Image 1 (cartoon, helix red, strand yellow):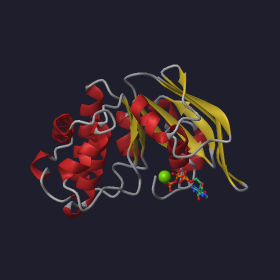
Image 2: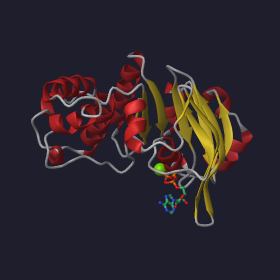
Image 3: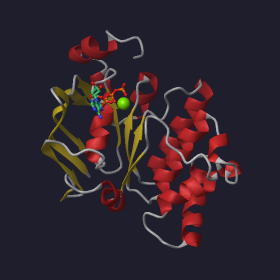
Image 4: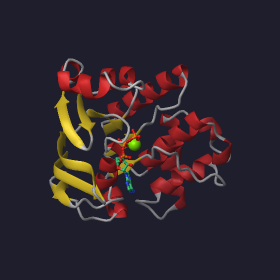
Length: 238
Ligand SMILES: Nc1ncnc2c1ncn2[C@@H]1O[C@H](COP(=O)(O)OP(=O)(O)OP(=O)(O)O)[C@@H](O)[C@H]1O
Ligand SMILES: [Mg+2]
């Protein structure tokens, strides 16, 4: 469904993504891990059109989307959330989710319906009329997911959707990810919390200093020596 071929993104002299290739199959939950600054968010930005890679290609459903603007990539069926939560505080929860739906419709009624369905999936229906600014961080993260779902995306990319959540909130977020996947939506997940990422992922990509150091099933990733040295061994937040 999604293929990256040698994606390279530089910031000045820094290689934030260094020749990264990966393949996500339709229906998968695909995890991305790596230490702080490894290039995970940059990779999301390159896929979703927020940044343009210097080299390499991004193929979505057989179509080269490398140089497409972000709004058209969204329309093609990829939606994402942001590591640093971005919701429209002064709008209601329902209106925030509707923003996603307007990707495909100009009808307020259709957008309201799509938004309601998405809010239901992320368990925010009871907050529909609240201002988004009044939500706590876990709820805002779920609202971002609802906005992504309301676009009708086939592929949803979540950048640290569980970071900073309590244990109970995390358990709920994992269930929501599974629910979304069971609707047939493919998911790419960046996550620092290994106990969360490993059990839900079909495959895992490990980045270190911008480079792919492994891409495999979770059981092989946790036993990969290079991964253990680069990531599991050397970082407290793993
Ligand atoms: N817009 C930018 N301009 C300059 N440097 C950037 C920019 N965005 C990211 N970087 C740098 O690129 C590298 C990769 O950053 P990125 O945010 O992709 O890492 P990450 O793996 O998502 O890290 P984290 O786990 O902390 O979220 C870092 O060294 C970062 O400082
Ligand atoms: Mg990041």
